[in-house]
Length: 246
Ligand code: SAH
Image (tube, rainbow, N blue to C red):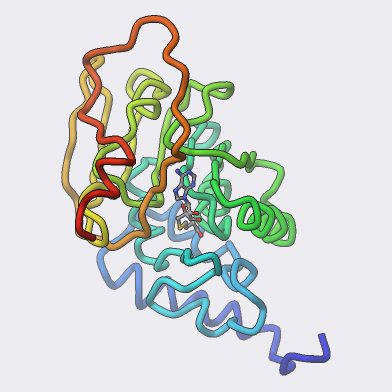
């Protein structure tokens, strides 16, 4: 504690109120359960403690390992697109700081979050524990493009890293009538889409442009066992992606 300036403990509450008012409500997002979650979750506990004021800024923020905690508005937007409701099971790909997972937990969802970088997964676990959300957030280290088959099916899925398409495993692990929110597109610039399962078909609606760090799939091949489904969305291998110009 001795190495950082002492602050008025009320500062974070005020910063959070301003964040919700100026960055989220003013941009037209009116989903009260999401606004309440954004007011409740102490975002500054999801960045290094010396960056408290920046934590409430209107931008993404570095969390180490070349990764970022998403901009508050984008977290709120993607959460409301998921149509959160208490008790739903949601798969998150890209735990990062754990902040998006905490917002989903604050909305009453049971969160299953996968992160490929072990150190970040540990960072998220510590942050979620400090903020009091670990009980409803289950975290796993691995390649999230394979989903979390042991815990499937999921009512909802959210990708917090950009990919050329939603990985087929995530579509397979979605419950009937489920919703996926994902930034899809080229490296460095994507569109946030909402996908909805309607009688086994995936409807897709473009929502808004965004910039996310890329989803990085592990190089190892999954063993091909049994028949593969032919009706999945197109899916490029990580080799194809690496050959492209960024
Ligand atoms: N949701 C996070 C933001 C995550 S940034 C938050 O609220 O802070 C995107 C994260 O996706 C990074 O932590 C990155 O390591 C992770 N990621 C990238 N590719 C992945 C993959 N294939 N599987 C799991 N996590 C992945």
